[in-house]
Length: 149
Image 1 (tube, rainbow, N blue to C red):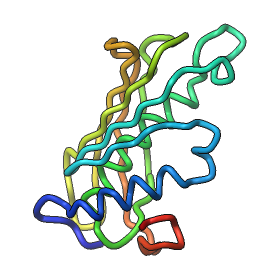
Image 2 (image 1 turned 90 degrees about the horizontal axis):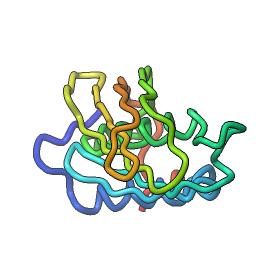
Image 3 (image 1 turned 180 degrees about the horizontal axis):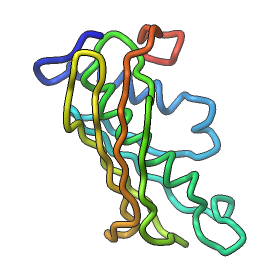
Image 4 (image 1 turned 90 degrees about the vertical axis):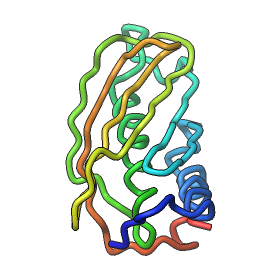
């Protein structure tokens, strides 16, 4: 695992964004991602097809946004391989029924073989969820095969 000691190159951050936006699962969710230096931001517009029977966003959407924000904050620091979520703990704080959900992730600790990142999730400025994940390097190289270009 090659850890960036300085700000990751712009080409790395753009490569991660392209990887994300071309992932098959994101055709359905249609989120928007921005990657910084040890940070990431994911936004998603709430739609009726994301709501459960009680007319609020399903918890799986909270998880996706929190995990994605923390994951890409972590992978912004890893220049050579795709990281994997090893564990993720989340708190669902409030229901969301409309508007935009915004997750912001940041790296809080880096070790030799793992990165810890946390994320917060807001809906129209109000905190609705938070989470912390541990991310480990995979053997999957960042390259065109995974949409990294």
